[in-house]
Length: 140
Image 1 (cartoon, rainbow, N blue to C red):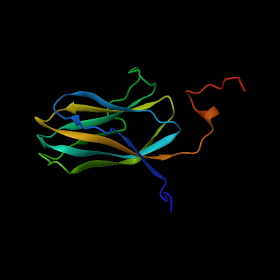
Image 2 (tube, helix red, strand yellow; image 1 turned 45 degrees about the vertical axis):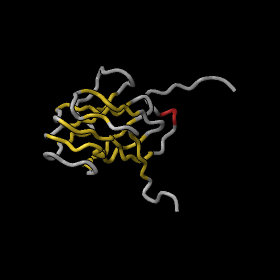
Image 3 (cartoon, helix red, strand yellow; image 1 turned 30 degrees about the horizontal axis):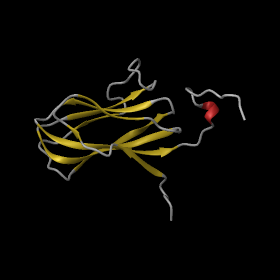
Image 4 (cartoon, rainbow, N blue to C red; image 1 turned 135 degrees about the vertical axis):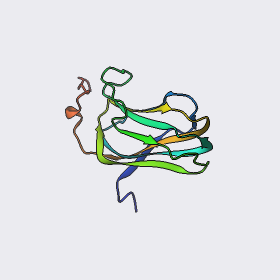
């Protein structure tokens, strides 16, 4: 039957702690995409109310021009247990091109907890020549 909604998923395969601030997952799309939601799968029960922001890096591996929660900011409910999913649907999808990145950043910690961060996205049709960070090369 395929994928009638055209949804794709990207994310870490390992859990990251929610007890330390900083970047813990970076995703670089291979084509033009629109992010429509993000979610965390809790692998260790959380103590506190962590805040996880997803930032857009306009240039891969560079924080110049990087947003601060401009994809989405998620404030966890207080003390969610392992096995729960914390998610946020975007009101307006965020478009990313190859050469840009989505970065998961824990900005407020809990005193316990771990989660696997994931993105739900849809591929958008576009010619590589229209990607802002792409350059054609000669060759056979």
